[in-house]
Length: 424
Ligand SMILES: [Zn+2]
Image (tube, rainbow, N blue to C red):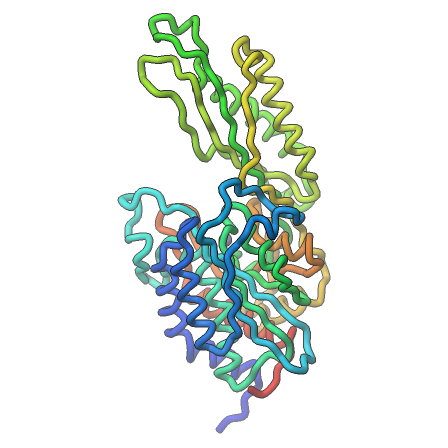
């Protein structure tokens, strides 16, 4: 028997468990955990965590528990079947630092299936990539976290501090799943979120807000269209004005985003309106997502958007008397910057270098993650670091499996350093 260092033994244990890890990722991708339909994926995870020796806590998100907390995003119709699963590996006499490994298992809608080369919820492996909705964002990353812990066990160790594995939902729409975990009392000395960062650590993320805008019109027969007010065309004018504001917000700049052309995006994600091709439409509703730089206060950003819409309405003879209504519904998420020089990041960088043979790069994200809850509201450094994925939120989403293997090794070595090791 050759003497091996713990690091070698842990890396070998990741390799030994990797086929099982891929099979498990596939099982998870097979569960179409779209918003409101995440329960069967959570059932699978609760069973697996129990089987693997975790103490499992499951509960349903209740708006009443979290609505007064900072970071809450409105969900006016509440939650009916919104389950959170948390597995804990507790240590009777902890020596090291505790860790939360957080990941979301909710996925965004897959769109028309005929635009996919393979069925979105029947994962196919091709040339070293697993294809499927959620394969990249971020079921594979969640599984990397679990199998990093499994590798420690396989190598004969266990963490010398508490490790909590969170499977949350709502990451793609509100963040209320991660918030519910904070409310429940889960805290640690650091958090790790294996989102598909392409082997970089996330330095910052933008803030994100959603709103709905209802525009009214005055319906007349199109034969007299000039005497009516077209709600759909008015909505287009408002959207154009909002894009003007988008340019202003980008021009204000932020040090972490200076290298990017257009980091803040306003996106009309949904629009509906009108009832009949030959009637001037009396209504139009659109939904928009806006980005904002870290440090920006949400209330003032909301005010600016409302002012811009009100200004545009004042210039319109019909809208001036029938102002559009704005409802802030969904994401109300502040941006977040991971402070430089934390011990957690230093150790992650060291583990990354040991596995990849290169320095850990950093990334400024133009989207949001759940990291903000740990970083802004719980005083925990939140490391977002994970595998290479492509086409997330698009068609033919996929994750690179070799990348998952190496990320799992990095996470396992990081846990070993951060939490310390004990013989199992
Ligand atoms: Zn994600």
